[in-house]
Length: 120
Image 1 (tube, rainbow, N blue to C red):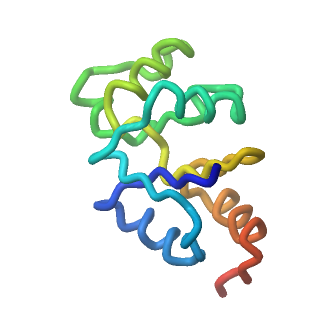
Image 2: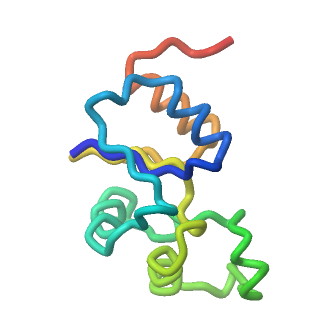
Image 3: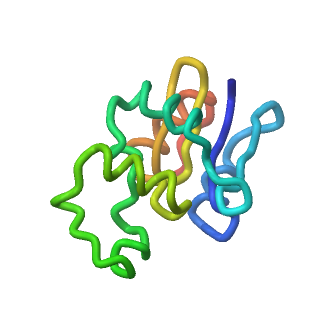
């Protein structure tokens, strides 16, 4: 399994995806094709946490008046399945590894994984 979950309208996602050869990866645009329970379960097995997959920058948090500090794992899971913007993006998922989000450390780990030189 080699899947990338991303949002087409996200400039950061597009910039990260453009750095790698994804010709043999399944690309999933999560707005058009939301993640399934099975895919979320596969991600959870690697991260051991739904919160690690949850984007605390989602516009839905404010719209729904959510207090992220009070959420529990089940809440994160339910929200991730309920609306695509709750997924931290992009997510690169393989049988052995997962790379979640766009922070510098994660992007660097992706470069190592793909064997791509770091940008200056």
